[in-house]
Image (cartoon, one colour):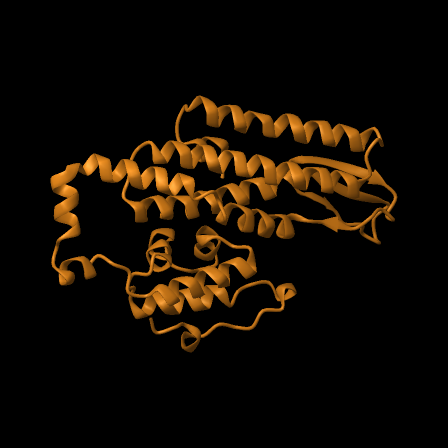
Length: 255
């Protein structure tokens, strides 16, 4: 995931937030190199910065989407998708990894995208990327609902009174056809992704369906039986270190 993909255009406010990321990480990295910061302190500082930076970026992206007055279900889908992308990017760029190796006289170190080496093999063992990504996903999933309300207000206004009234008075069978029919399945997969600190792109990379089909599932819509099998097989490929059970078709809720 690149900064260009996160910004999706030359919006000044978003670019300004993106540009603050490098300066903060560079400052912490130099503090560690100069031995002014311990690795534990550097990890704590960057974790706080990651949560602040990711929230600011997510909120600005949602604010700009709300100005476009898009359908509410599309807005929520974008909010979830952007949360996953931002969490993945921030976890990669704000994490600290230092894993001493007994067979090496030196210890490799990575702070964000900065590689370095610590002399000796007795440095502290730190690798907080997975934990940081989980914290970021939890934070971003609880974004202020004012963005959602602003978008809904603008969307209804853009329809005009006649269109809005028409939409509200359609026959039940017409509106039912547009509504998700599998909300429990969607919640189930969201929870499986959360406990693995994955997003839909991670699931696809593990052999699951393409990310658009996964998003359709997460939105509560029907997918084919072979898609369900791909999802369970991909979920079952979680690293053994996570100590998660294998997933089968019978684990998927029926509605």
